[in-house]
Image 1: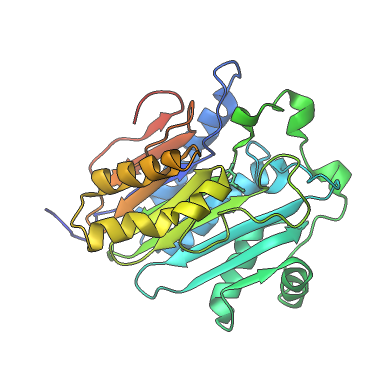
Image 2: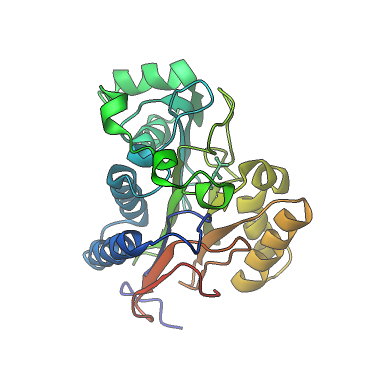
Length: 295
Ligand code: ASP
C-alpha cells in the first residue's frame, strides 16, 4: 500500500439522528463543501488535528446540526455544550463538558489539550478557562441559537445531531474531534459520550474514532476506544472492529453510529439508527455524501 505523503483520508459526520421525513439537502450541500475544504487542507500539508478542528468549528457555526449554533437548550433552558479532541501520535487530548454558551466548544477542548494540565474541564471551570484563553462566548443566546424544536425536529430520531471529524494526514498522523449540544431537553448537568475520551472520541496510532448516538450507551460500551482495542488486541480489521463496537452499543439498548479512519487510511462509517449524515474523501476515493444509504 502506498503510504506516501499524498496518502490522506477524511470522514465527517453530522449526527446519527436522521428522519426520512426531513429534507436534508442543505446539510448535504454543507457536508460536500466541508470535505472539499478538508481535502484541500490535507493536500496542502495541514495536520489531521488542525483539519478536524477546523471542520468541526465550521459545523458548529453553521446551525445545521445539534452542535454550536444548532444546539438546543436543556430542561432548564440553558445550552450546555460538550466537545473533545484527541491526537493519535501524542495521545494528547482535551475536552469541555456541560459548558454554557461557548461559541466554539471544540476550540476550548483544543485549548485544554494544548494547555496540557488537564484533559477535561466542566461547567463554570470550563467557562473560566475559556475566558482566560480569550475564547469567544455567545452574547445573546436567544438571538444566536437555532431552535431545532421549533423547526419540527422534536422527535428523538432526529435529535442526534452531534458533529465530528476524523482524519489521517500525509505524515500518517490521526486525529479526532467531536462536538454536541447533547440530547434534547437533557437534564441540567447531563454529560454525554462526546467529551469523554474513549467513549465519544478516541485517537491513537492505530485508529481515530468519533461517535454519535445515545451517549449513555456509548459511555457504557466504552465505544470509541473499544474500536481501537478490537484492532490492537484482537487483530480485527477496521470494518470488523467498528461493526462489533456498534453491535455492543445495540446489545446494551442504544443506537447511533461512528466514523473512523485507521493508520493505513481505510475508513468506516457504520450506523444502526435510521440514518447518519456523513461524508468522506481520501486519496483513493472520490467525495461521498450519504445519509440513509447503507455504509
Ligand atoms: N452522543 C450525543 C450525546 O449523547 C448525542 C448525539 O450524538 O446526537 O450527547
